Image (cartoon, rainbow, N blue to C red; front, side):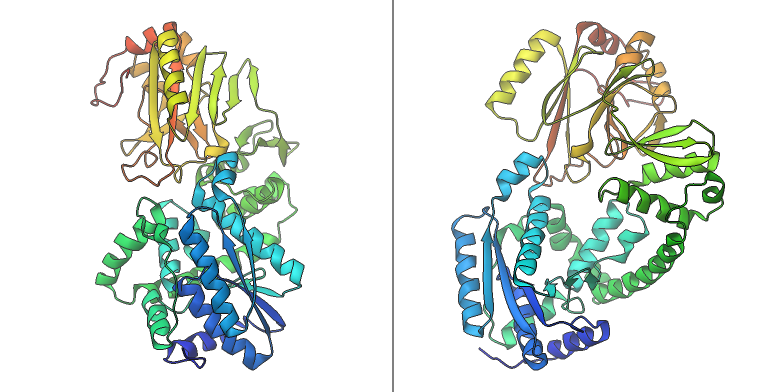
Length: 487
């Protein structure tokens, strides 16, 4: 094993570190060390850079409690590697599956958040200046594609930043092939996480299927993506600097005169601060912009996290609201994983990530009592499962399916659903607006055939009166078969 760098990749990374000043005013650094090829190469390169610069180097490994014996093997490999290179080593054992189940979130998402939390705690405990992680050029391209497919705004086009707070990414200029070549040239061993090969997960699918096709079009696709993201980041930085001027503004007159690019940034930043770090979807950004442009006193729009935006005295006001309940305008009830009773409709909305014996028993019991059972299976990475509601229909409701945006009022009319039923029929929403109306197709892009490994099933059990109303409507309208019948 070589302790001196071999090949051009070291010079490429070293130049990037100097260009972005990743190690300037840095006395110590900790590497997020999984033992995979990426983090091994990162640790090897930084061991040389830090030695030359007098920077104290640490490595930290997170055992996620997911992969059993192979995860134990990875931990032992990391310990041995750091001992060989004289790098201070720390590690933590966490239970990601239990945390994911408790939080009702996807395994990968929770693992990432907990991993960064562990790294930050170790950094603070040891008084370390920076955290280095091993994202590379192919990761950036993968992230860019992922963001585009999800319909991200311009921020999603920025890809992975070289610096984010205390976190630095020195390997961004290298492709995966360059990293593997470096490991081979320098005699570096590494371990492989078998879950990275499971294409049931969206990112793995992009990595294994889409990136190779893109590289057939342009072998330097990852480098091209880096250039695009750098340009996009420059534009975004400028727009955000302009929006910062209006950070504390609440005047509707002043806000309505702003360019959309600045107004969107203002809205996003204000909500981010009020909600404790949450982001708004394009649907809510558009709704807020429309609210501000219209400027009608008393008008409002509901947002995620139980927050409403209201126009009062020609000012934009954000309010925390208890929107669970019912009034003359209808009802809106927050849904949780498990069984949710909707008294206004005498219906149950059941949300399950896994259908086991207990769930099967519940389904049979409710089918016997309520007769009508409708269900959909959703991609957990395409919906916000922490922000699900059941509510009654509201004026102007729309849902997009079959590549068309449809008015809910017209759907109900075409379906000949009685007026009284329309008032109580549960509409399922997430942070991106209407997700599904039982008896109709789900929102486009939420029920794709390709599984992400953490699918969510939503069952709706309705009373007999509602059942008759829905079953009596035609299965087709004049535009073709867009309606769905009873199971």
